[in-house]
Length: 173
Image 1 (cartoon, rainbow, N blue to C red):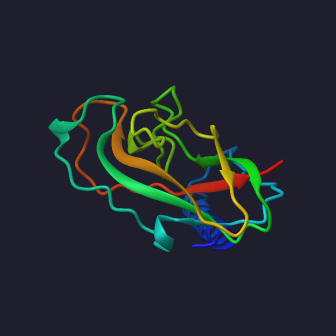
Image 2 (image 1 turned 60 degrees about the vertical axis):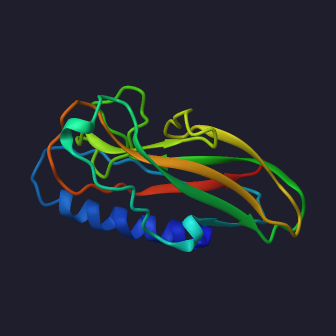
């Protein structure tokens, strides 16, 4: 999935989610705006172009608060770079307000269950907006592999199906 498709998909999902939230009356509301400015010439592909990454099925008793459960690889590939580039991968998305570390990605910030993303070492957990250095090569393929698992801000979470939209960008100054 190219960077443009990812941005469009994320925008569409956010618009749909925003419409459902606007149905409840309130004297005020808050929204998070996100945008990306980059000088990259590379195309970004996540998960081989597939829009869904299934991280597995778990039992509530398997969860330990604020720890990643499961380990599914999520490759990010940079291709068609017009020149060698030095930049950073950045992951953006909603994180649970129940998790002060801002590293449990959720579809609604009031949720306690979502997903953690680890750097290529499989252990270092990525925070929302954190930069991860990556050098891309001209006319080559550069790959960085994240590890994704489920997580909960509390032990023994409610059984349910969960998802979380994220945006991965390659930022070149």
